[in-house]
Length: 182
Length: 387
Image (tube, rainbow over all chains, first blue to last red; front, side, top):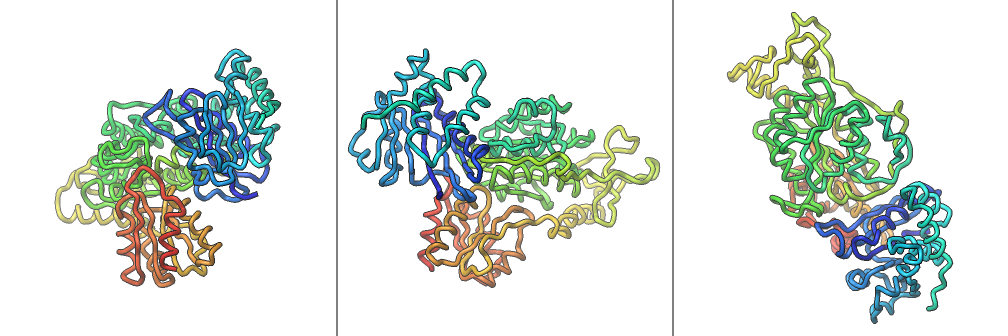
């Protein structure tokens, strides 16, 4: 495989950083022969503003640690969509939280668009906080070159606080099973 | 990092996915650092935060001082108390420390300062990257001294060079600066921490003579005096004034010449031991990039792209910034048509490269003034214009 670049973006408080950390960690520590680097947008803003995290994956040494042309753009807020859609490469793949993002003509360059009501799915589990993990499950089910289900489940059990693990695993499963209609 | 290991071990052996800041903190612990004195500042705060958790678990001490002036003085004192000590800061904090980094140079006090660089001058860009403190680490404090400054460019190297920073500090008896930058400090990648038995630890030389005959600043043939610390029965004299071998202030031309010449020469004469560079695709290179820190990663990216287009370009990555690798760069100048120096400042290392090449090749700086690291494409464009 060659270099793969993924950006997760949304608003502060959605757990965007956790998505990047889980993916980076699953790939780096559990997937044989693959490296990953995770970077996060970092600024004085915190909750509410646009938040993003990039994961770069490669079999070889990762030279430049930041994303330049996104192969995948996983977006959970309208503001983040507008801010970063220009970075998606021609023929890249877009994952959207369909209730929080209205697509415009910029999305046309995507080879494929996967839509999921991740927040609604999370709410059926009692909290919208699980939306990020539902989205990760959805990404897992529809891609082959980012991370495996097995490594992600292992990392989630290790990294997520014990009392939240079970609900997160269900959220991940629901995301995995969700069928996008477009 | 595994919580189990964090509770008990100095060396967190195993594979981790972590940041440059945490890796540097773990490197310090692995080599035996037992005292941190500091004042938190973005983008270095995670180092203090991590050590505030870890040091007390290991029987060490963590002190948050009232400011950076007290912090540097605190770690000098801790070192004279016999422990390996460190602080972590960023440009504005380093500015406050420079006076007493000079005190550390004059009193030959082993300690480590980590500077996670952000954009400056002044408070500048607290949360964004810079590489603008290169000259400050060399010339920040007054008087003549030869600093050792190391500059990692991966999370793994943050760990390894934190260890080496302490080892150089102990071996050569001086404050050593480890220069990170915000990108490196905050990015996460794999860190492999070896078994504790694989960590190379250098400890300061102890006096071999008796307390009665001991002269605290009488150097051995290697120009480094053995160091007794408070409580070992030897006299401990610590003064920033020009001092003789007894450690007594002796303010005359001869004593000044002997002391200042020695504290510089102990580094100058050991440049071969201290200077480290990484060479990447330089064997057949017609063009070269000289880079350091996170920008060296962008430089590698541009070289990998250029090579695919048949352009013969390689990288000389500076791992030691000071002492500066003049001789290696002069040799490179005889090989290549042009040297590019991408850096996140307005020409600090570029000027050193120009000085080192003695006119033997062309030198072109590629400057960003802070806030972002170079994109490989930006560097590639410069090279393509000449190739």
